[in-house]
Image (cartoon, rainbow, N blue to C red; front, side, top):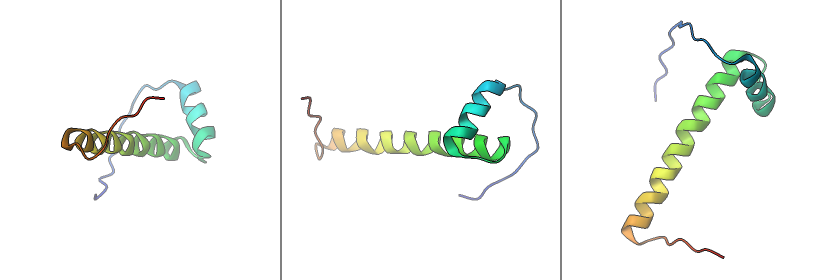
Amino acid sequence: MKATVRKKTYNLDAEMIEKVRRLFNAKTDTEAIRAALRKAVEDREIQESLDALLREGRFRTIYR
């Protein structure tokens, strides 16, 4: 995926950004936000893949 970088202004929770910086060991706010967005996209893609496997019957949910 080709990255398109644009300068934007957002109002974000400073405490949340700090938590994300620590979580991802990011040096800057921008790095932390990119990491969090990347993680959100990856999580969604994984969830969609698992849902597709469940629909196809190639994977089953087991509760213990």
